[in-house]
Length: 352
Figure 1 (cartoon, rainbow, N blue to C red):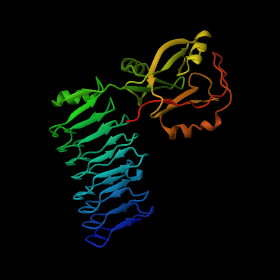
Figure 2 (spheres, helix red, strand yellow):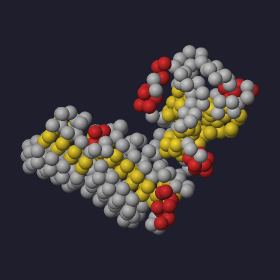
Figure 3 (cartoon, rainbow, N blue to C red):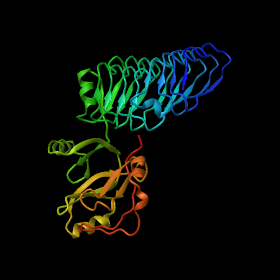
């Protein structure tokens, strides 16, 4: 369950390590200065990496961080400091937080993808990553803690697809050449203006997700004013659902049923036309879609035929949890509160 402090420290013959899933904690300097260590499998359960536990492992070039290390209980303390060849880090999907100091002082780090689903990037998580030139923040991120990207001297392209992410003190203010790419009116633009950092508006469109606890309906809108008004009237704001891509041409139509209070989205012009003929209100284009990219899954709940009957998500885990295998058969549309089962239909968002 635990690898003790200094357990393998200074072992210059050790070339590979496979950590079993029973291990929850690797203590201080456990593998420090193992100069030939080039392969590390952290397993699937480790939650705590102690101070420089893999420090000065000069042959380590890449590593995969399991989702157990990106859970709220996980902790880290400069575990890879001094790994002068560590250039690539892969983070498994499924976690919600990048712990403080996890990648601090990884001076050779060049490539990292932060998976969608991460909500918080801890303090000093990427500080002093001197070779990092570009970072992309997914739309799920809600908070960048203090000094998260502080002193990343070559960081010049910072893309933040989360319009509401809160910036902590000096999140990246000491990165002299950085340009922030974010949405107009976002917290990124506010942070850039406050700290005299160049700002470039992203051409893509965030789709906000809201939930009505009274009708159980989810609504998706690109209008921040509508989002704020609905939140003020009792809807729950659930963040950015996905990013509608620049240059997409296929319209996703938005319709409203004045009898049930339901909103509906479809790319099918025939479906749209039929719903209009039987009394649905045409509310125009909800967003535009590509034929490829991240799919937006459409599901129908046969047990809840009211306003909350349809659901849309890019989260394959959420889709599977809602059990689309129960949906199937012929699909018809109308104002009737009883609706036959429908099949999940992929629309498209954008791959970031």
